[in-house]
Length: 384
Image (tube, rainbow, N blue to C red; front, side):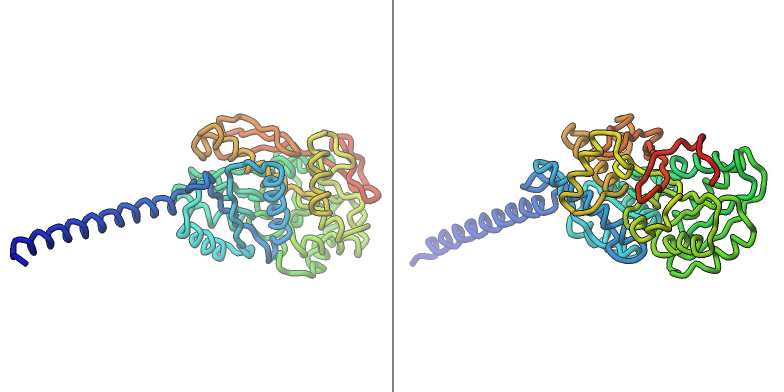
């Protein structure tokens, strides 16, 4: 074989090798782009939900998960694809789980549960350019300190301030018991500032540790000061223990509670000890619901999960509904897009957006009577 033929053959081989390498490289880039795309080939929008399935917020987490499941059931053609991860009710573990999911595939938006967890996730979402929706998240800092956070849940100004205004008009010896964590502190702060707008009498305030089951000492300290009424804020087993202890010590004054008292698990655990307590609730937790939409949601939820829904279920459902609507309208998933909506019908109550990042729900106030949540007019509420 001639030297010229060998050179020609080798040149052709080199060209083939180069073409093959370039083809593989182009395919590799294409596959990489497909894998990293939030929509990918399925056309789905990836959403991460960081939800507590254990720890003090486990009850909240279960209701949120069920709200997500209800939305998927009601909207089978939704482009949203929700990945749920466990926060264990621990801010640092929540951050670790969230960052791991971002490394796998960055989401377009995320949902967080519990005030402490949401506050810990906010700077991570901010740095990654991810919209973070807080449900069951009460702290002001969650919205004020960031630009990519959005609250889709109640605020103490809606369920605690009305009670404080009522109490300030009628009573001068008022006891407040609150969980010494992010949620309890914002409830206490809201109650105290609202009360002092019209009443300068001293409040008797007692904090408690949410992880402590026995609240005898806290309740005894408060009752020794002989309050005319008591307001309680918090969640978890310690929260339930406070109401049980108030009944054990035969406290005869009116008891008010924050929105967490409407949790069906709390009411079930307390039984007769819940009787007479006044608190805020969503329409589907009222006997009977006044709106057709919330009554329908209640029936569907009970059929699916064999129990009543709670506010976390509605917050998660509404959050996904809003994200879906923005996606369909080809609007960016960010707080300005939500603010531009002005208001939203909600699955159980109307909500509005008073300022970028904030949310306001309409609640009803009820009194526990014979195992049912009966509507009351706070202004006409008679002293117990």
